[in-house]
Length: 305
Image (cartoon, rainbow, N blue to C red; front, side, top):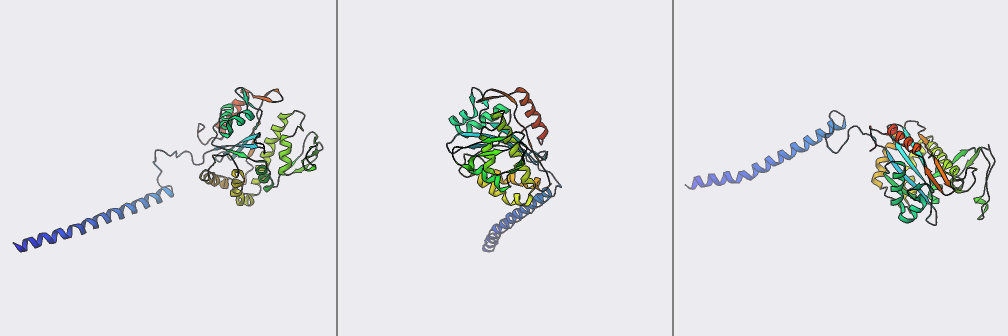
């Protein structure tokens, strides 16, 4: 009887050991299986079946609203930059602060509701999705432009303006004169009344200048790659923005890939419409149709995300 009890006790003492061994084996096999699955997906042997992923979109487009806000907190101008890696294009759409949305100008909307309301107004006016918004100080705009060396610009009319502040803010460029413009000069021309067609000329110049700056950056691949983090820090310092570092890091990978392809990707899409007076610009329906065509041409899938 005592021998039987001892035998049963021995069997019970071995049971936990067997259980631990069994659980260890299960965990080991699970880890090995997960590593194998990761390797197969990484090398493209099998696809990713996650329901939240879209295997057809390997490099999505990004629409970012950059709004230059002066030292008094007033909206000076804005630019929507669309990065479309699959199409190998970067679309630049300048937006005048006097563009009308509803019964208000973009400047008035920004004054009332800041960047959140401005983002919604720009998206609604042009029929696009804005992924992130960034407010830029004058210094941020100028510093970023200077990093890529400014632009070389030849005006087809004389650009002339005497500032009341100091000589550094004067503009005097003869028609047809090839001129190297710094970030400071670019910013002044964007806002000074130097064009015969008034503020429409400023809007067109903004589109031209930003397009040239980005294409210049793409001609200096290594310098631009080394400065991508610097650009992000310049843009977002003292900024009203929802552009997170995590989002930037994802977009950075696509930008670096585009930089490696020896592209000249930037092109301007300048709004067309009617200036009802010097302070109100209404975007035409025809231009809105052009925007929709652009979205389709640069989208990584059949529809805009």
